[in-house]
Amino acid sequence: MTKIRFEPNRGSKPLNVNPIQVCVNLAVLAAVLVLTNCATPLPKPIDPKIGYTEEGIASWYGPGFHGKLTASGERYDMYQMTAAHKRLPLGTTVNVRSLATGRSVNVKINDRGPFIRGRIIDLSYAAARSLRMIGKGIERIRLKVLKKPQPSGPFWVQVSAFDDLREARALRNELQGDFAHVRVLSVKLSTGRWYRVQVGEFQTKSRARAAAKKLKANWGVTPLVLGP
Image 1: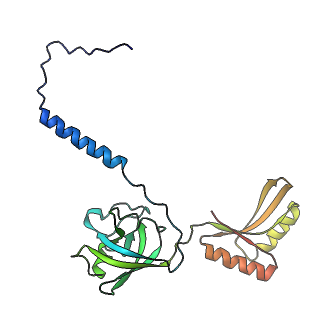
Image 2 (image 1 turned 90 degrees about the vertical axis):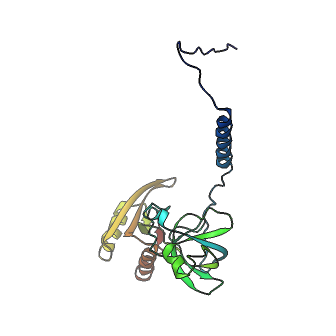
Image 3 (image 1 turned 90 degrees about the horizontal axis):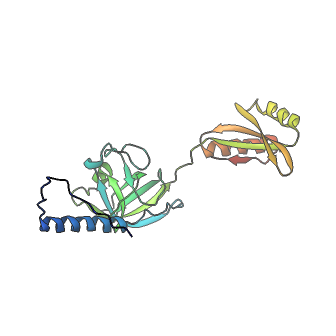
């Protein structure tokens, strides 16, 4: 292997190196590398049922993060009833109750955290103030899931499918009297080309389900709710 030699520039002065400072710098660099390599990845989100509970330590965060973007894309507002949790789906509403005082508050999960071992939720300043834990900084709590976020739309409801385009269009024309948006989608399957008749668009799954229920009652079909 060929060795590469570096020749100093002519007229350059020798560097004055402080060996103590070099050791300090190397120690700091080593610590940063250790912390980076040992960082624990964020746990995968869970899909909890209504009534799901957790018990542990709550903390709060405020002025240093006010106005900054949260994991949900919203700006953090320390005066709103929000919180950060590592695993609950963003948009979940939970009740947080102090096990010491019995005081409780409802908050929406819109951020990720806390990142300190032993803590399960980071409350906004407003939520922490309602629990009267600002001075203490932490509080032992029990959280309970009250409401899960609904998937964002649009949703469509498939009414039926035909291998004859004329039949699909005929049904579409009839459905247009009850629904503002009706479409016919052409898809090629192993059994041939089919034409799917769908109604929509619905921005929430609950509205799509209501439409499916109406279709089943009025048209005698078995509709299928389709989401993003």
